[in-house]
Image (cartoon, rainbow, N blue to C red; front, side):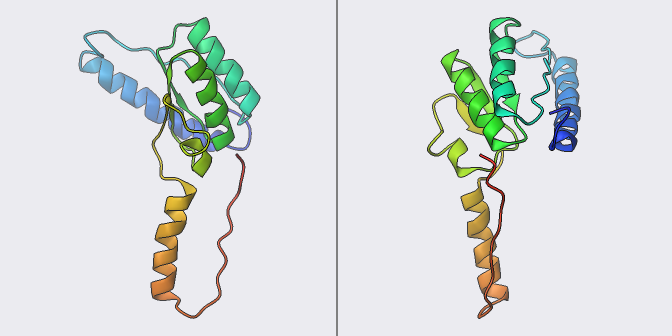
Length: 142
């Protein structure tokens, strides 16, 4: 996202993607062809993500989609990509649903999910805060 509540994360993703494209192209591209990065602002909204994915694949010829600074954005974009037989790579999607109940053959993730995070955190807390009552609170923005 270039705007909305996750625009800071979106800017970091954009900068990293620009660097990766430059490095890939400086090393001969993919299969000898340079790659081009298409960018769309989701505004961290699932419906806009779907529209963007459809436009990038149908109108601009995108061969793969990545991004998503919200699980809802990644999930909806992933379904739109799957409907067009295109891979979707979720970059900041922590919801278990992304590759769990809403997962499919065209959806991949870069990050761990909420269950994995809770599992690791619980081991640490049990070891270092034994006998204490603790609460684990996280956003559910799926």
